[in-house]
Length: 317
Image (cartoon, rainbow, N blue to C red; front, side, top):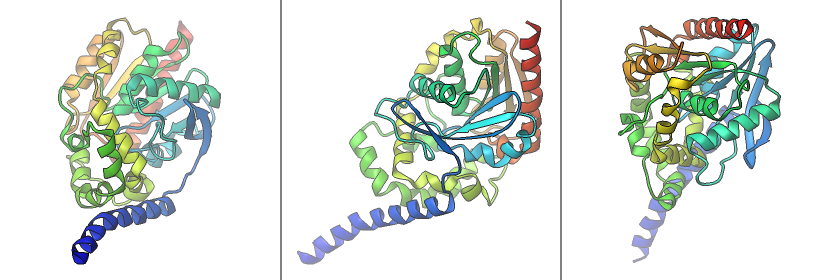
């Protein structure tokens, strides 16, 4: 019986040890590179660089601010004040209470965070799920609080079924999520990680530097896995309410989409949504879902141009 107990202990402890090593490696390779502000009962990790009209960069699912700052910050900071945030429970932002993963709650927390940072009337630059959260922030923000939205490959519509790379994260049991986050999640991500990146970046290719400079190594952290799983399990039901406000939205909105996006459909989430929001602009380019990483010059120039147009539009009102 002793050998059976020994095998069971190895099966339990080995994944936990691997998780610990991966977390340590991620922490050493990708340390915090910003400051912290209290919001939503926890701390939000953020960066604040540059000077000029304010941009707030909001990252997508399974990521953190480095997925945007790695390529966009230096390209924008000479013309804009660029504020980037780790969303609640992601990167180095504190994990909020269970139930704080919904779009509306995240919108509330991030609006509080940018208020405390002292950002006035920014253009929100949301990528992927960050686009959905930007739309939710616009829906709950007081009139005049935001200048406009510049959304890159945004999730804008309720999904009956999540995109393929995110479906394994749907785990209804909170206890099972927690158990997996400390055991099998990190080793599994080592095995599945390259294929997941390939599918998210398709038809383009993830750069070799993305794991470190783009913060990809942080995805092994237990709390990030739990946050990603909670977001996936929560689903996009809250977008239904946000969508109801599209036809009456008064904020300037611009959308950039890659025609070959393999994660979200450019026609559905880009063209259809732009047609519903009064005055919204849609720009389609050749490329996939990760335009900020694969085409940073194009993306930064698009953000700068749209932000300038939004600022001019506001000034003319």
